[in-house]
Amino acid sequence: MAQIVSSTADLAPGDARSAAVDLSPFRIDRIRALDDPLFETAYAPLWAEFGAKHEMELRETLDQRFRLAPRMLYEMVLVRRGGEFVAVRDHTAALADGGAVVHLSHNLIAPHARRTGLAGWLRAWPIQTARECLAANGAAADAPVTLLAEMEHAAADDPARGIRLRAYEKAGFQKIDPAAVAYHQPDFRAPEEIDATGGARPLAFQLIVRRVGREREQTISGREVRGLVRALYAIYAPQFRPADLAHPLLQLDHFPPDYAVLPLLPPTQC
Image (cartoon, rainbow, N blue to C red; front, side, top):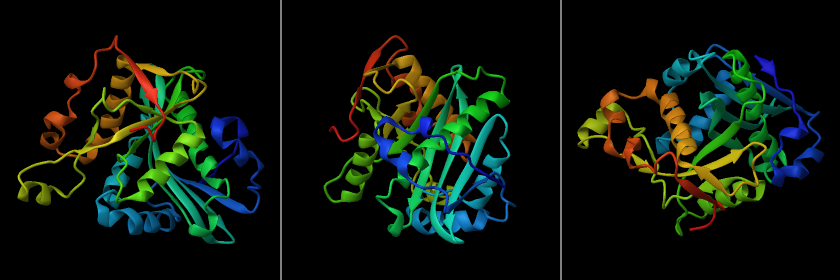
């Protein structure tokens, strides 16, 4: 395991107040293997929060993902204070059309540490993983980096979704117009459950992005969107059966063409 190094230059435009957070009391560790002594400390709270909702991968799936390095870099970032859990996030960096994309998977902060500015750092640290992935694969150090998150659509009966979307919006993330790009996440259920219910059922999600250094741009090309989604599905591929990934909703032929210019919207915009 290795500790992470924090740079205020990586903070998102709307996370400027996080620069004032004193990180010295925290122990911040990067976990890159299933046999890391801290793996269970990081995994257990993620499983408790997301496992029952079919939103957290099994240990064996993450073991496969760890082993994709250096082509793809999966890691967990664990934050503790005085040995006590404070926060954890996990993400995967991969190459995408000459740059790097980081899939922001899960993020969990203990209640006492919320609204302290720590969340801004949890959104910034994955940029280091992207740069490491670029270097490990011989890409240019100044190649573009995009942070990419799959977010559920807002729902009146689930206010937590709106809170998450507002947090990303305040940070300076943008949403790829879902009216133009109907993105779906693969079905995370167990294969036997998928088969018992007549096949895979991909879920509709929104794509939230931060294109590092290009946060003020208000459009994105169809080609860039396709590259991001291809990279995301490539990250997922080892854990899914080919037949489940072949679902029509997971194909890119219904996406806008490469030359299309698509609007980037505030994440809370319906």
